[in-house]
Every structure is written in structure tokens, then in C-alpha cells.
Length: 316
Ligand SMILES: NC(=O)c1ccc[n+]([C@@H]2O[C@H](COP(=O)([O-])OP(=O)(O)OC[C@H]3O[C@@H](n4cnc5c(N)ncnc54)[C@H](OP(=O)(O)O)[C@@H]3O)[C@@H](O)[C@H]2O)c1
Image (cartoon, rainbow, N blue to C red; front, side, top):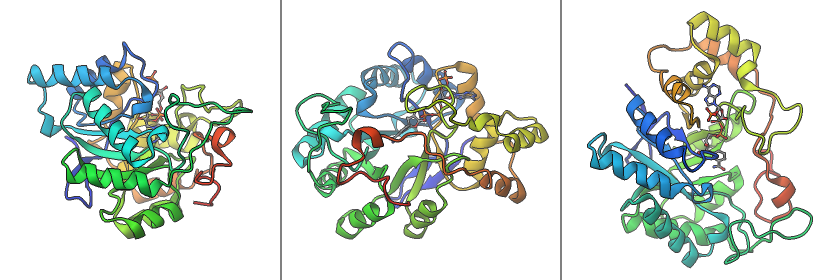
């Protein structure tokens, strides 16, 4: 059993998806096969994760073996920062489709509002740990996404890591309005203002790092908190006979937000999707809302912070 949210394009998005950032080559195909067998119908990918060819091979095998049909899956991918000019964004979308061995993706996002220097690898390093930037306006990138949707290469289009002013700017200039915003969201970073802003516009929110990415050293600093050991979450988990991860993911579902937990561990992949046989009470949802610490894990400020389009200098 699964649940979906409705995108403004008319297409449903399954509320729980499988994340694939940091799923290594040699691991990601097995993770996807385990996930599909466990009932996942939504997979979150990106060009920059550098594992999409293996994702594509896994999908092809699943389709060829009749384990799932293309139209039953919801596949997201993201245009990377070095492909923001309209022509390169088109090229990036074509590469994504070729790597995934798909004729269309269900959702394509602009991964970040800030563009990097083009034609020099995925991370064109500058000085002092900074990237070399491009001054391409993300409205140019948006035009490529609109064209991709019209051409049938993407069923829906959206944004990731944009703040509310940037979303409004795209909204005001768009021929096709954004269907989705993917941002970091978990009990220690509840994004209430951005969620309300999106709700008012009918934009579906997808929360990334929904478990606060407890296992990753990337972006994580000494002393950073662990969502999965929070006492409030632990107490609710005990009351329901569920794990902390399942309580966090159920908090997303009961709050009307999609979540895309990543795992390459079979029992965790299954655990993270076994969240459709219970509900949290209004009081439990509220008590998890209250553990918010405004703690942002994924913060590329040190490498991108003075980019004119960097989004995280705004309150929300
Ligand atoms: N748009 C963006 O800029 C952006 C940024 C970050 C992430 N994302 C997307 O969001 C997805 C999820 O975010 P994330 O990968 O940062 O973090 P996450 O899903 O919050 O956490 C993943 C980590 O938690 C572990 N884990 C998974 N399930 C668990 C469980 N039930 N109990 C204990 N540990 C568990 C995983 O370990 P194992 O794999 O070893 O099991 C992995 O180390 C990404 O994979 C990516 O698709 C998007």
C-alpha cells in the first residue's frame, strides 16, 4: 500500500521515495531492486550523483523481467549547476534520459539556483574552496525545463534548494508553474514558513535528508545532532512499536509532505517503506514539530555562499 500527493501537472507523486545520493556504484542497482520489491514506486536521482547509468540498468532489468511497469514508477532527476544555460540544460536532460534509459522522467528539477562555470567538469574549483560560478539566470534554465515538459521528456517540472523569493520569481515569469519544491526537511529543520508558502501555491514539497542523514560525513560536522536519537521521536516510536525512522517518515506522511529516505541496506529499505499501517495523532505530530532546531545539514555556503543566486542567505 502506498499514498500519493497530487502535482499541479495532474500527475500523482508517491509520498515515500528512495533517495540515491551517496549510493555507490555496485550498490545502487541492488537498492532499487530491493525497493521496488518492497513496494516503492518513487526513486529520486540526479545527474551529479554519478550513478544514473547503474540506476538505468536496474530499471531496464526490472521492466524486462516484468517486475514493474514504467508507468507504475515515478522517477525524478535534476539538472546540475554546470548546465544552467538553456542549451546545456537541454543537453543535460538528454544525458539524464540516456543514462536512465528512459524516454521521459516524471519530474525534473533545477538542482540548485546557483550556476557553476560551464564545460569544466561537475565541480569547477576556484580559490579558497569556492566553486567558479556562472552568472546564468535560473530563469534561462527554467525555460529549458518548460520545453522538456512540452516535448514529453518530463511529466512535471520543479525546483530544489530555492528560497521563497526565488520560487516567486520563477512563478511570476513561468509559462508552466513549478509543480514541486525539493528541500532539506526533517524534525530538526521543519521549514514551516517555506511549507506554508508552497501550500498556498499548490506546490508539493519533497523533503530530502528526511532522517537528517545520520550516516554521512559529507556536510556533517562534529557535534551535529542525530534526528534518529531524539527523545521525543524515541518515545513515540516505543508507543507505536515502530523504529525512530518509521516515526519520522510517518510524520512526513501525516503532514502531507513527500520524503525520500536513502538506504542501500535491505532491511532499512523495507523498514522505511513499512509506514502505511499506522498513523500519528495530532498531538504526536505537534510534539515532533516542536523539536525543530533550525539545523540545516546540507549547506554548501562555504563553496557557494557569495554566489548572487545562492538561496540560503534568506530566512526561508
Ligand atoms: N536536492 C538536493 O539538493 C538533495 C540533497 C540531499 C539529498 N537529496 C536526496 O534525498 C535523499 C535522502 O537524503 P540523504 O541521503 O541526504 O539522507 P537520509 O535519507 O536522511 O539518510 C540516509 C542515511 O541514513 C541511513 N539510514 C537510512 N534508513 C535508515 C534507518 N531506517 N535507520 C537508520 N539509518 C538509516 C542510510 O544508511 P545506509 O544507506 O547505509 O542504510 C544513510 O546513511 C538523497 O539520497 C537524495 O536522493 C537531495
